[in-house]
Length: 318
Image (cartoon, rainbow, N blue to C red; front, top):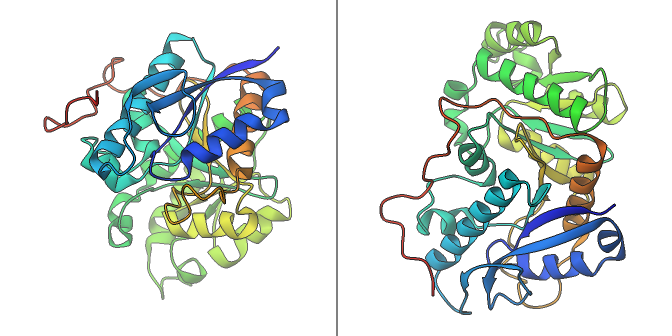
């Protein structure tokens, strides 16, 4: 039986419409998935759920607003049970903000819309990386990286590996923050004072130096590595598997996946976009749906999501 998925077009100025169309044309996707495309009319791909109209040459704010509306609609459909999972094409984060959505990216927006505690995973057949902190400046990492956040990320990661990836007893490693895991305090104390106790509490291994832990995982020693900040984790997975890795939002009450690349506006409209990662994201979402019932993320203080748009949100496109 085919699984039913929602697929958002992403920023209509980028390669989202192109990789969506190419993914839908792939026979593997057609055999396994019934896809409802969500996005603006006029974006260059046929949509089943329209969130307005896109006019080529329109400004970033309109593109961001339409991207945000598509995400909201996809979440509504998943929560209502009309689709079993979501696949999202790339968005432009600055445009999303200009369009009235005060989120640094998909992960944070999806968490807020569903009231879930979430974590960002990049996964391929070679490596799985989960981020303990996501889209924040490097200078802010130490103030946002706490024992509690690491323990929570480990919990979400373990649940996701068990329920969505079918790994009964996940082996999870923690990547160190400082060079050589601080080298006994010479290069910083965070690894011994924060990360090491957190790893013990969470029941995971580490912290291990960044220059070896990802290699160890790729050789089969670990099922996933928790990275303390965005670029150390993203660099590892993209060097290992760029073009075939998939972004998975762990902790949601339904599967959500996306490709491992951005909007690539420099090649948009030129029929040059490689759909490999979008196809991989769609097939992985279908596999997760088929493998197990989606697990529920930890809810916040209320079950109803708050309005994700600011008071300055522009009117919906006509």
